[in-house]
Length: 417
Figure 1 (tube, rainbow, N blue to C red):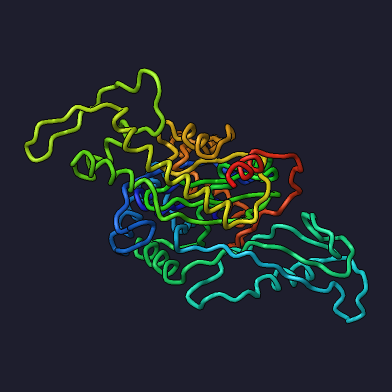
Figure 2: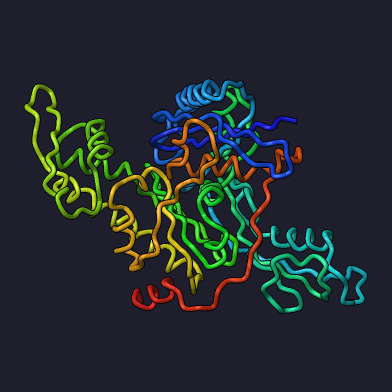
């Protein structure tokens, strides 16, 4: 049985890969032994539009990771997000006693499986496929708050879940990309769910937190409460819009604008940085232009503020979340931008914002600890139990009871409305 796990993140702007090695001891710890990242090709706003181009970069990225790890791999796990994914709230209810006598019996794995199957019996279009079913809460005889019903006696068992469905076409295109790159696809996971494994602490999940993945083509969000995902959404706006804004205002190419954004861009600026000089290379024989970081910030900040505001409205108006006491965790390439925490704090009216940095998992190359590697490292961590046991099905995170104290979320929603 292989002890190697490969995570692959096929993003709009970059394609990333990490190789993790699973220890053979009882702890089953992961060490990251290979890391690679290259600019994407063949994608637009998170959607694969050229399979051959994307497959070519996938092959290059994994080969580079293989080189740094000193091994060859054959199988990968990858992620999906954006408009290609949808989250649906569902519930299932079953009688514990199947004999028809309605007796109170001990709930076993068979009953638990039946109630999950009941929750899966929800109608959705034929062009969608179930990706995950994530239990949020088990309810026994009308009493909610059970993390796991096994061993508890009851007459009726109910479960509330978040059902994640994905576009069949998108999944097929992902599989084709990986196959043409000459690797086997072990599984596909929701992008934000994978990122949560690498960046969100259990206490944050229990108290209620928001993970915001700031990508190049889209901004994906997941709300976690009571130890489980309860809401997911995607905003069709990301870092590429910021690049485009700079290109239009400064009348430069998108490639030059992207470099300026990475090297000098910020979305919240104070102090001496305001007057820091920035040289914009000339285009087509035109003389270079001098500007300042403050000037760039004046272009970038409104767009990033708009993205955060769109995310905020989506969560407040479309989820049933009443209380969150944890943090807002920022991941993705956009989380690398200076000032991103301060801007998020301003928009969300809370100090409880942090960058989703990945924990130290060993290895010589520590670049995977950056928030833009959250998804790809999360894929490795999320699948380590399945690899260790020889299985390939993803386990969902179980819910836990949440805190009852008033949170920043409750204060925020009061002021929002």
